[in-house]
Length: 257
Ligand SMILES: [Zn+2]
Ligand SMILES: [Zn+2]
Image 1: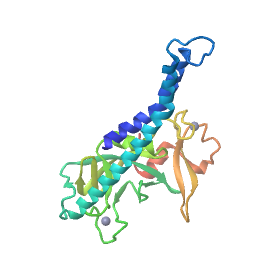
Image 2: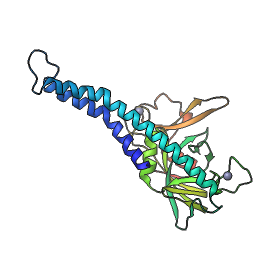
Image 3: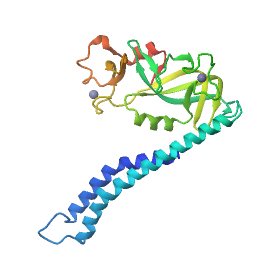
Image 4: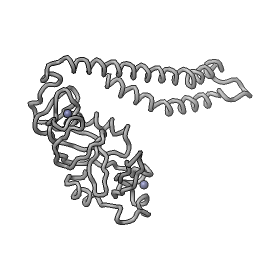
């Protein structure tokens, strides 16, 4: 299901390219020229256009609705199974070395990692449970623990949906549960941060320097977020709000790749 979803979203991204190329082809075939007869019958050309602007988006919307319904169902099924299983069963205990990939934000006045769920952690940390303080994560019927994908491409795909975050490579230790796509474990060591090749602002020039900017959130949710920019996009940023790659590596105690 997950891989179907990934391919589906990849196809949707191709739609603008496909639409533009089709428009160009129809134009070249004389579909928009009223002076002379087009190369192909006009109904064929206009038919293709209707298909493009009418049918394809409807199919895409139907696809998204189906996906979200099946996801809700499988989540509910997963939850039921989780509740009915004996304590140790929801995942296999991992007996292999647990290395993986995940995406994080770099936040804070002095840089720290912030996971997608909002938990802060340093480069070498033990998980804490937000729901039950008496848990030593991971607990089988709870969500606590450090998560990581086994495959780099799964994490890279997630990164495309969260621009502004970074891909990190981690080792997990202690008690760990393994499932098909990843792990959930007790403690985590962040080995390296992979930085994008392009500037996160202009998306054009090579990324060179870390810049922190102030974000306003709900309530007391105001925070600093770090991004990486090119030299041009970081020109007007005050020096105290920037870090070079090696300074960032030292501050987070990880290697920057
Ligand atoms: Zn817990
Ligand atoms: Zn730039």
